[in-house]
Length: 406
Image 1 (tube, rainbow, N blue to C red):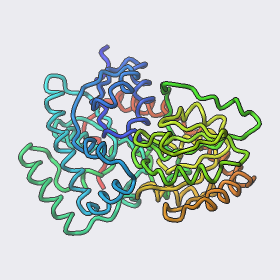
Image 2 (image 1 turned 60 degrees about the horizontal axis):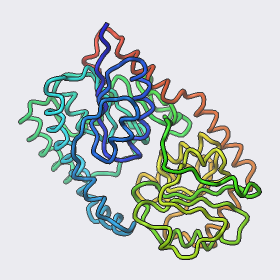
Image 3 (image 1 turned 90 degrees about the vertical axis):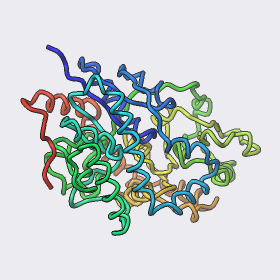
Image 4 (image 1 turned 180 degrees about the vertical axis):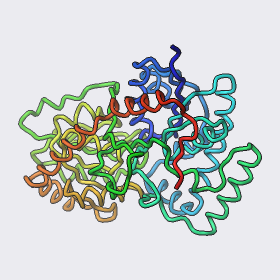
């Protein structure tokens, strides 16, 4: 019997793509045909899953690639905060037209789409294809939302833009918020224990915990050369990371400490530009995070959901320094659950870093709570549980009309 064709629709960002890779691998291993549209930057990692990669282009990625300091990124976002929802919709429409061309001769039977990748939702609605919403960050329903508040003026503009587009394309979507209505199956890549108000989500939401697959890196790091030193990992993720002043504060804070520090600066900051690197530091533009975390005692992070969940998976406490809105929510969540501490960027000093690392690393009760969260993650099932639920949906008698009425 011929297996279903599954399309995975996403946005070009590591934080959204990485959680899907292990799930896609599981589905490919089950014999499904999986296609995954991807921009050039992500084609290699998607290929490793065994899915068929379908190239497309994103204008959003072009803008981010031109920014060389975290202040530039934050200024762009702050000055355009009211326009960001429209940018997302315009990106979704642009991608939608590319999907129409990509799948013109081979429509998928099921669409998986990241909750931000509205093009997947629109494409599914256009062709009456069943869809599964994947939450790479917090799940959302009519009771819980982690999205920024949108003004009535912006809502009206979005409604007008969407109405013009959907009427032209014959897509049965009546208003903008319909794009965020739950599907029959919604999968969140975190345990329910970490989800905001997790008890307010019904049986249509599955919290599988982080979906962590294999990653390839150009090099392994000699972190075992200083076996007498505990490992301190420092990384601000893949986008909001060009902040040289922060890395210099870290160097000053832990230069003469007992830590073995592994620090990632991102692609736009060269380690050489930071001056003298102490002997107890390993500084690279990219580090093999999944290889380092099993040996790590504490992680100074930006609070991206992938990094947060990976830290919890390996039982590693956090000091979180968020760089944007969603990361601030996660930073507060880490503090609320007693899994670490958090500070806003303008609160960070050499002394704050030293004190936070000392307090968090020495707190036995905090470590116990981290290990409890680790257990919740292990019990959630990860990528295998997600793939199993998707297969169950496929095996149902009908895949159409899966959206749940609000």
